Image (cartoon, rainbow, N blue to C red; front, side):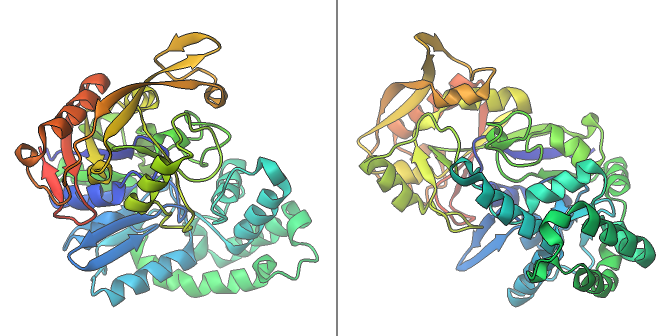
Amino acid sequence: MGNNTVVVGCQWGDEGKGKIVDLLAADADIIARFQGGANAGHTIIVGDSKYVLHLIPSGIIQPGKTCVIGNGVVFDPDGFLEELEFLKGKGIDYKGRLFISPATNLVLPYHKLIDAVQEEARGTGSIGTTMRGIGPTYIDKVARHGIRMVDLFAPDRLKRRLEYQKVIKAQYLEGSTDERANIGAIYDRLLELAELFKPMVTDISLMLYNARREGKSVLFEGAQGSMLDVDLGTYPFATSSNTTTGGVLTGLGIGPKMIDEVVGVVKAYTTRVGAGPFPTELIDDTGEAIRCKGDEYGATTGRSRRCGWLDLVSLRHAMRINGVDSIAVTKLDVLDDLPEIKVCTKYELNGKVIDQVPLDLAELNHVKPIYETLPGWQSKTSGTTSMDDLPAVTREYLNFVASDLGVSIKLVSTGAKRDETILV
């Protein structure tokens, strides 16, 4: 049997999963995306070429690898086409190795319209959505009136279901002059796209099952991070899907025995985009220095990311709910210039010291981080490819983190490029 590995983000997203998936994809036969949508942004840099993907699995850059999009993903047809054009421009041949589940729900223009209207209505209570229509699409899915990929191949059924949208979304669509509210135009566009998508549509669950029986290896790719999980993250400041290991099973239609290893991606510090609790956030010169050196701006939205120290308390939560075996530490080199580095090891909440996230994650707004201060290495680690070549103080920092979390270190990223990596 091949080794099947899950790559999951362990913070609030933006941990560098794209690079890690790209690296591990070299030893996998199939790369399978299991949740999220075009609100994700996975960046891969190979040599002088930069690739930013939102829907298509990051393994597509590796020659000859099969990439699949599971039923747990919400699929933006126009966004997908833009990515195909992008890959063509980069000389990446995707034909015959890119497949989509027929049960995937579609992100349609009216979802983006609703997303924008709802976010504006929240006012000061906005949740920081990317306005990509992800939440409204998942709402339709759970309410059982979403449009799925398979509907494109049944025109009469597609028309009926789109007409029904006029009824249930009348407050957004009726009388609107916004082109995103034009159900007739959406219907015509989807019929045009049906023939393009049809060769790519297949039973992903069955494909993965058969691949396992044939001894092939699968790399499971998620989007966002564990602390954004709709059930186990900082709700309501979360995404609309299960970003954790459990989402792999439901998002691809596989059983738990198909997972052999879980790799958690951990940035050497912590970042977050949008609203919501962030106990270790640095609103000072140090936070700004990390943001600038780490180029902490969203790949999808371009928004500035909030930056702070590493939070071991929230990471313990992520280790537990994902069943993480090993971690991939990213952006280590961003900390190179700091004379000292703080790590949050506990919280203080209502006068009590706790070492796990509160059961009510909303209480993260009220915790005070308790730090352990470690010495900085103040020397260049960028581009280092051997653990032995790291300063002793740097290795101590990594060992401190791994020991606390009770996991091993699988690899360390020391730069944005594919080859700027330490394989342990």
